[in-house]
Image (cartoon, rainbow, N blue to C red; front, side, top):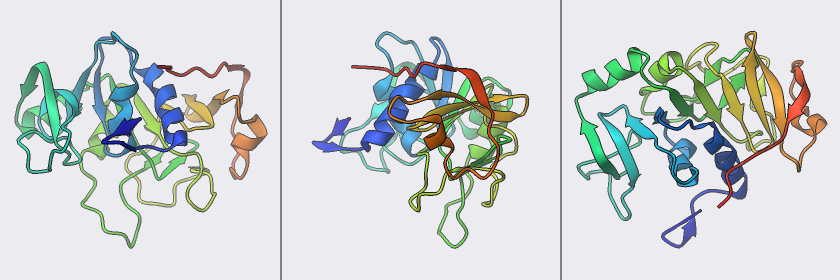
Amino acid sequence: MVENGKPDCSPEEETILRRAALEIADGSLVNLGIGMPTLLPRFLPAGLDVSFHSENGFVGMGPPLPGGTPDHDVIDAGGRASTLMPGAACFDSVTSFGIVRGGHLDLAVLGAFQVAVNGDLANWKIPGKLTPGMGGAMELAQKARHVLVITRHFDKYGRPKLLPECTLPLTAKSCVDTLITECAVFRSRKGRLRLTSVHPEHTVAGVLRGIAVKVEVQAELEPWKEVTV
């Protein structure tokens, strides 16, 4: 996708977003974590009726505000100027987290630094690097009815992000229901992530390369599908 004349995501990230868009059900209430998840609305199929929740205090988040600044009246959870859709509702943080803690979110879409094969998630802190804090991720990862994690398959050093166990500080334990990368889809089955779909440009062996733990592979892999424009 292009914004202000410049691509704002890589081809690999666009593949992830196009595949992840198919996980959004019509009529659902969805929270988008900071980073790549905030780009997801641009890839949704036409005609889908979805309400986006932002934990800083509203339901009905619309597209980012072009040329906006973080001091605009309406910002998303990452501080980016946003818009409101018709029928949106604004409220205080107590109400917003009441929605989260009450289990009213159908889906939370989060990024990740690491994911463990048992569904543990680490997405808020890398030791030695400045971080503003965990934010709402800890609550979202535990309370949403379904947690979808979208992330690049390998980190910048070529190491897989799916691990036997996370080595970074945890956001939440055993919370990941679905993991989508540019290479594959993994879904939680009996407390462990199982490989269920592989991108046609990749192979099962390539997807599992370097993962230092046995990952179950679904007997009949599902065809790779993604939103097209």
